[in-house]
Structures are given as C-alpha cells and as structure tokens.
Length: 74
Image (cartoon, rainbow, N blue to C red; front, side, top):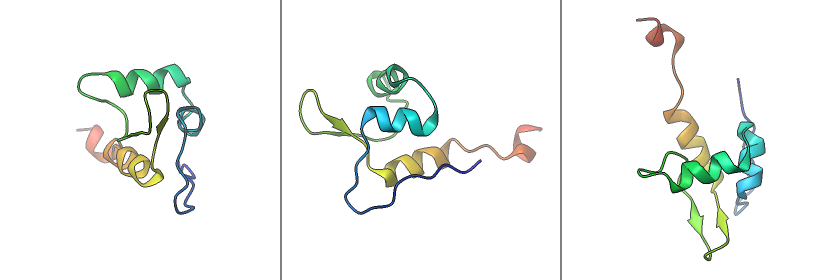
C-alpha cells in the first residue's frame, strides 16, 4: 500500500491531516505524540496548541514501521 504524502516544500501537516493520511482518529495521533517514548513521527511544536508534521518525517516514520512479509513469516 502506498500513501501519498504531500511533497510541496514547506507544506506541513496538521494532526488532523496526518490522521486522515494514515486512516486513524486524530486522538490516536495525539496519543502517539504524548506517549513516553513518542510512538508517532517527529513533530514540530509551533506553540502550546499548534503542532505540525513534516512530510519527510512522516515518510521516514512509515518506512521504519514497514514489515516485509518474508521477514514476518519467520
């Protein structure tokens, strides 16, 4: 499955946009962000209420969670 992460330079994703992208509820993304250790992609805190995600960080995070079917069968 391929997820089309926006590639526009400087285009940061909101929590809601990231949630739609990976098909989870925004509360799940918030929970990933506040877990210790953090379970979601790296994030940028612009203020106490504004959090954004760089598409490159999202791609890297998704890549780290990719499982090769051959490997998982072992």
